[in-house]
Length: 478
Image (cartoon, rainbow, N blue to C red; front, top):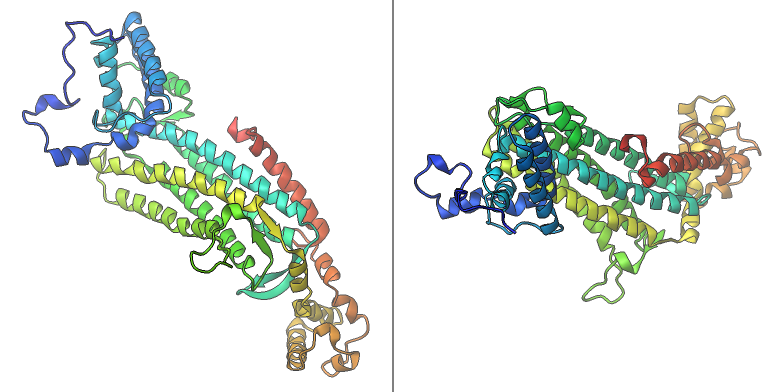
């Protein structure tokens, strides 16, 4: 029920309308409107207004009755609009929408809520609050994806596969070692998300339009009430700083780049040419023409979406690079790409997790590929080094052995000792232990290597690293 009394003046059509005598052009008004975009920050704006009402009361700029009426009205608005966006074009932006509704509910006290602040510091604060909350949600989704990755690595433990360089078979590794390489990448992405949240954890509110607040508002208490770790040090910078958005978009672009690389591997591995794995029906599609097709569309879309994420980062930096000091209306364009990035990244994390959970490994095909004896050529060179031959010379000798075997369509393990000794008298019967896949893996036992015991340890450490993140109890999240 409205508490507006008859003496309350009618709200002006624009918060800034007193200076103007003619209404804005209709097309310009549509261009200028941002409620359809920033309306999603209504929860943050309501939270900000409650904290600001308390600050104004402490500064003696509101009576206790006015503050209580405003807080009650704000709580009513939160209930009314929970889970909904304000209707487009009902106001210029989310801030004027809230103020107009407050005036409808509490009368002239609603006009007092804007005392000492500007939409410039208000939108900067809302955006930081919204981003901090969004990043917390994205980190939770990322932790869930990594948990699925670790489950797959656990189930595949001990399974050898060919590692690749230049898309050519190179050396044997464990499939779990391959998967853990993405855990390391995603761990860096977690850190970048943490850093972008930390960059957003600075409150601009109280900076006014550019010069600061003229009233005795307690900014430190206000920051604590809103959950910020610090307040901005310079009011002019505070209203125009969007570095934190670039930080987030960079973190998002890097995360998408890593997911794109994982997607490319799974696309290749699911092909008949590799036949290493099969992704489930839930993340694949068929062909409208060719009945036999199973297309890895989910992973192809993950890879394709990475390009758009990079474009948002470049677009944001291009938006900011030529702006003069202070707030400029160009900054209205900062939110759409960030909101799109938040929504899209969340969807991609969910879909990628589902793709991992619905993947079946073809262990027979993977083991067969790992049994390629030419993957052991480096070990053969290492054998010669153990016998005292300089590595470069050993490399040359083994290269000749490889050419000889390929020409005769024979595996390295199928050559006789007599054939080996054609290339070096150093070869002895103990060379066969160096041409063992199991021994090749076990020899890579240094930190970061693919030896089974080393991979088992890395997998256990990864579990410990992500468990508190998955539970939402990581130290930086408290």
